[in-house]
Amino acid sequence: MVNSDDILARIEKIESYLSAADARNNGPVMVTGAFNTEKIIPVNISEEEIIEVYNEVPGVLLRNSIVTGLTEVSYREYSGDQPIILQPDDYGKYWLIVSDEDNIFVIPSIEVKSYIYRLKSMAKVFDFQGDSPSTDNYYLLIKPARFQVLPSGREWKLEEKGVLEFTNRAGKGSLAKSLHKSIQNNQTNTNLEISKIHQELNEIKSQLKQVTPQVDSQLPISEIRDNQANTNLEILKINRQLNEIKSQLEQVIPQVDSQLPISEIRDNQANTNLEILKINRQLNDNINSHLEQLESQVSKISLLRDYVYLQIDLLKVRLESLESRSSRD
Image 1 (cartoon, rainbow, N blue to C red):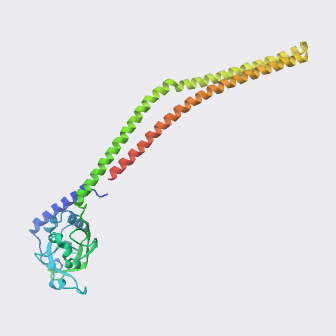
Image 2: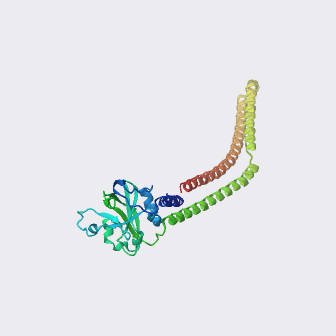
Image 3: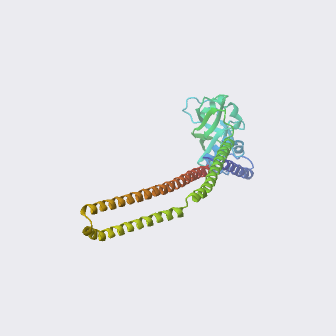
């Protein structure tokens, strides 16, 4: 994107240079054949800079331009077979700017801006594009015409036609001011959006600070780990007790076999097995219930934190994108 401040700075720099050149030359000097007799100090200005300055502050270019007009032969030329020649003319409609021997540019005089659409002779030096030229149009210099100095040093021959673009005047105005205003508006909108994102980010951080102590007070991580450890210890103790019971049964069964009838032994064995199953079932139920509660609480904490951090990450991405776009602007 073009920066309006850069454009204005370049215009001021060019204006300063042209003023210095004007002081050295004491006004425009006629260019002679091959720059051999009366030499002119070329203006160190590029084609692009001429376009920018002409479309913004064209009067700056006059001080180092030679005012020219079509020769009588060129003015009456309609066939296109004869070359278009310019010559010095105090009331001419063209400004000639010498950048160097190989770069001689011609632009329309600002004196004809208001009625350029009526000048058929202007079409001899410039091609028109865009809307049809009329009083309702505003034109921009797209490309200056290029000329070559003739041996006389007081005439210049057209090498390449320039380009003027006509467009609706509505909404145009100053290019630099328009660009500057557009950039300012974009910067303002970007700053507002960045401010909103910062505000949202701070609100989320504040909410996170408020939620975290509540969650920690309800179920601290250390307590979850302690509960898990206690559950594991309880399971180990019960398994140890079961093993001891089985060991005792293995020792008692041979003695009981010799004293009790087979049917009674089987009944006792069955009752013991049922009791063991009940203990195991109760133990499993208690363990599963406890684990489900722990997992549910841990899951809630994890989901809550993941959600908060996700929101923070999304806001950071938006913020970085806006700051990047702002820096490019």
